[in-house]
Image (tube, rainbow, N blue to C red):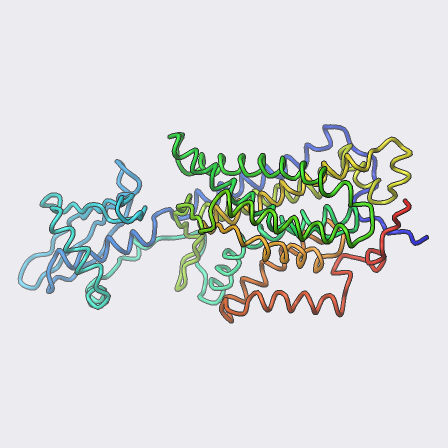
Length: 478
């Protein structure tokens, strides 16, 4: 009989360490997080859009003949969302003077804008509601007036925001593209790894992974909004609540689906399980549409204050949410690839993947391993869905089909059945999508992704880290 090659890889064959063996990996994760926090502390934290808005108000308040030099821009000690602009005014025929302008930003109930201009204070006091309305409507809303006023403003170099370094335009552009790829890479790496967990165990693909990720996306949305409605705070509390609900609910769904759908069919021929996963995808889509509604849902931006990583002709910006998502995905991938194979269950997974009959003789229950693996892969898919909700805000019941296809793309490109390959394929897919969108636009992006899948299947069917043996049909007698 044909023997299927080991799937876990590439996992280490050394004896499993004791609990102390996990300490270096934990320290490494803590070191990465500490380094990320130090980077955040060093980056500029003033919202660039609010900064430009407040500076652009100065010419409107000082008159058409005034020449303005901005000396400093800083947050007020009373409230971080308020900005104080110190500037020098020079008017022909009168001595120059230095004064301050304070702009208040925050949530606007009517429009839902969380960075709306709520008030302006000059040296003469606060602007009244009518004057503030006309200033926003006929000054900030007039691009021609703003362009003309920009010619009368000079910003002192000391008032410019500074990042960690200064880069030329070309280098900054490529760095910005890399920063923009953080969320897509995290999304697809988690999906590819989740798909490879099942594929490596039973040699079958699960086309319902995208819809399981959609369950996680809605779980993150519900959890974040529940935390906000309960008054437990915003920002980090909403993110934590969303992640906990997404992972807990979706992992429970995964365990149930693994027991009811996958366990009876997983170790049989390919066709029944393939049909079952396609049907499961349709069922999950309809369930989400009926229970949550067919319209798209949106989560207000969280932790989206831009941070300047590098200054220069082209400033490089990143949000704390993107950094947090990248850190969470990195920790999850490192845990699955580096720590999990050394655990008792990780060794059981490898035993069932290599030789199911021998694993059963050694006292390992393949059905239990499959159910727990499905719950773990569902938790990874839930993290991917949470990335969609927290980073991009939009959630739709119908997005699971394309997500499922891209999970398969990541797993195939990285290497069929290879856990490191699934994560690598997701990273390459995220980078490829970001670069394609930056150069050619988003219209043909998904077509390019699926064309890349076709090319990989034609010229390297086993993927980058896969082997030819992984393409063979599993031995169902084992």
